[in-house]
Length: 282
Image (tube, rainbow, N blue to C red; front, side, top):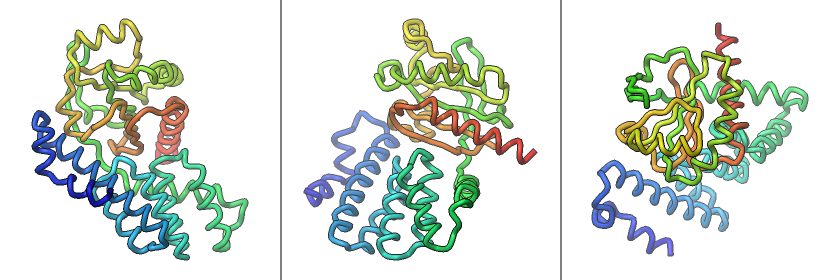
């Protein structure tokens, strides 16, 4: 089955079957399928205790640019742990947690390693906080600049918002997952309505009339931008909703593709982390 999938995962096939997509979209779907195949092969090698080969596959997935890096780093941590390389396992788990703080299993694994290597239980929280914070700052990539028009006809540029924490959500009215998240996203906006240093931007590829119709039926309190296809392409967005949290230095500190059941809680946690970080720096 894997060999068959691999034989079909050739760029020429995507050119034939997705001729109506632009080249960047075809490339994104091609890479997504490559990552799925490699991740599956890694799982099979792990089941046979071929940890070195499994690790190579996981590394390839990371290098390609998977949309699920937290999952892959967690699996890389497991491989190092099973191989007895505890320092490498800890670094991998830290990367996974930095990408997705909701990874309770990886936090517990990191705690196990910390205690096994001589750490004191009452100091684990500080160790984890400092390690994850350092990883977030070191690995954050700069958010690409863009200029878009909002529903009132105003042109706004991302680079002009320096010093702000920005929650950037890519959504569309026809996405049921996007629609389902809106009430909780509205509650998130309400939580920070008195803080001018936090902005909530929503980008859709749709025309203004379509967005206005949608938010009339299902009010969405984010600052709405229309005709965002160029930015969607620029950020390589392949699924809705996609959430990014950008720090005051225009670094992407959080990203998630797809529906999040507790989206308000997760994004609120990220916003507060960046606000506290800014206070400490200032």
